[in-house]
Length: 331
Image 1 (spheres, one colour):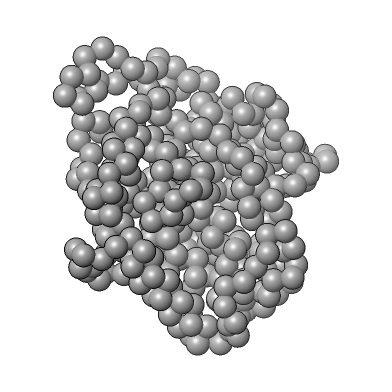
Image 2 (image 1 turned 180 degrees about the horizontal axis):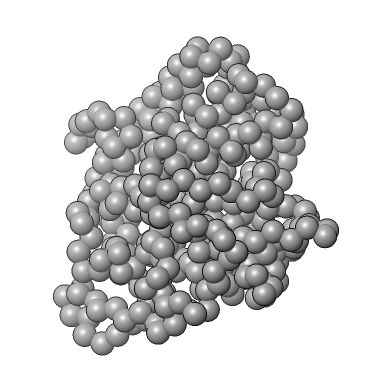
């Protein structure tokens, strides 16, 4: 039995695991995935996101175990594209959510965050008089240029970003690759947002969607991660394009140190500095309960006494700097 102090922080975890055509359950081995006679242990305390694709089922015990270990569970379409539903995050604190709501509710502060997101993404200053619509237009031009540049670099024919979620097979390979890569990135960003206590629906550049803030944060990294991965995988060819993209995304996210960057980057673009009042080391990866004495936003947190998380097989700890292989059933 381990305490919540021993659970790894969000930045120390693997990015995601995609499962389909099987049953996710808890056995004497811990969390396991069953495919016919094959039973594979799942390293629950090392994952940020578990994506369940078609043909997969999950037991109540498995969901409870994922929740205790602060691992996001997402129900997705085939190959991880399109998310239908997801679980909640691992913090009971609403402090960051309240601050996010304050920023998005003011036209002035919302625009300031949108400016910071643009500067963060393209390393280019935005004049103070620029409107949100102008920022979106400038962003669109830069993204189209990034697509064109990647197409030339990898020798892939590019006709524009076109795809139909309801008719996946009609899209050309590069658009399928981009959608698959972005789905992986969305899952990781969604998990980080929930883990830190933000709302995925309160976006600044994107609005009107339940995942608007997920899209905002994911856009910060696309030109350096998913776009080159998608074009490179398409150029390489192969019959299992979506699977290749997912595997290359995992490597790209690791090399980019995405897991350790997301939460500090969110604080930077929101303009909240070091996010004082709650140590990230005390928050990420553990469940907290509200205590008395919350004056001046200095909220003391008291971790719960014990967790029923499971140590699975001989899986290594996967701390920062140690690369781990993924289980065989990862597609």
